[in-house]
Image (cartoon, rainbow, N blue to C red):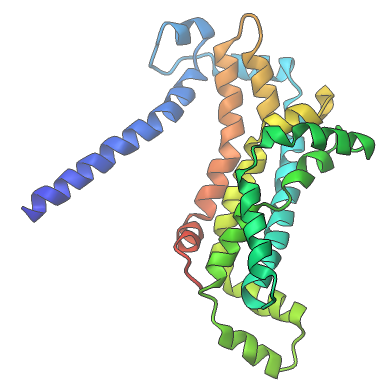
Length: 268
């Protein structure tokens, strides 16, 4: 009976994996075919890959879009990890009378839809002259209530004895954070880095509003412009989607082990 149960679980996982991977496999095959072949439902590797790549390069400034996405995602990720971890560390380690109320207000902010703050954000960045810059895309999400909560929950398992030992050795509070807390919480940082990087890399609505010239567009905006044309070439779109997806996949596989540990709240 136990063997049958195990076999059933494995069969379910295999089917779930196939269903999850099928769209990506379809994209990989589609990028080698022409648009007409894709519309016909052809599910075999074609010979149009280089043609689709050349057409994509001619139609878009892919290099500039990739650079814009990379700048926003990398700077935004580092900024979010630093600020969110400092806030989560402070909420958990230090005690104050109004801490619980302040944290409650922070959690309430998660209930506010982004559509409600789009216009105020646009007016604010417009008045500061920051529209059409990476700063306008990064600043509204440089730290989020979810990331602060994520670090706070993982900090609950952080051994306080390490901080006490550091204080005995004469370390300052900043040194305790950078030399003891950050190295110890590497799995948490890795998990947060994957989540944050993917959010910045794939963000669409706010960059669409904040970035107003073609030279500043990110990869998701370029893919959207290709798909919204009157007669879209699906072969080119498949190539663009695969190129846009690869960095997120690479980051995930590089940090996969730490990601699992971080989501489980483990501390090394």
